Image (cartoon, rainbow, N blue to C red; front, side, top):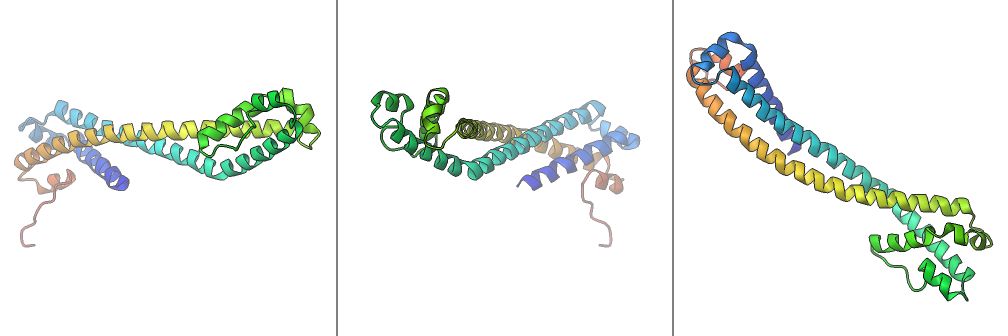
Amino acid sequence: MANAIDRKILETQYSIENALNHQEMREKLATVTYNHKKLTEGRLFNESAKQFQIRKNENYALQVESTDFLQKHEKETQKIYKKHVSLARMAYENNRGMQARLDIAGERKRPREAWLSQAITFYDKIDLIAEDMGKYGVGVDELSQTKAMTDAIIHARQQQMQRKGEAQDATEKRDKAIQVIDEWMRDFKAAARVALKDHPQWLEMLGIQVKRKGK
């Protein structure tokens, strides 16, 4: 689908630019209202569709990158976080206040945003828990690295959602722009067939197929 739209935009660009750059052709097209101003209008319509297509492609690519990042790092980070929680429960077995402050009581929540919210609460207390966690073999560096990865996962998830929405928005705007240029090209080609009926080679320069005599 994307390749078909890219091809359509490019072929439309060829047609309009060929008309604009061919003086004799342009003069004949002007007799059926397609003067330089109107051809430039078509160019702008097509450029609008092109820019929305580029924006859609860029946002989709960024969405895919975020998704790939999550697939690569989320499970491992969650596994390390659960290990830290287990050790913290041992460290604060008799300290219900700390259990509450770290949100480590009860089972870990499964949905992504839910466990990430619990992880944020936990790793925001690194300064408070570093000494006690160190007694169980978890140093400040490990805690900090896991916090950084948790933050990166949150950012990737935010980017994933944002880029998906922006890609959908760009796709909707592109489709509307394509509809505009399709209608413009339909009328342009109909007019060109009249103005250039004696110049089949010019019609072909505009992407209009011409039946050859004897074929």
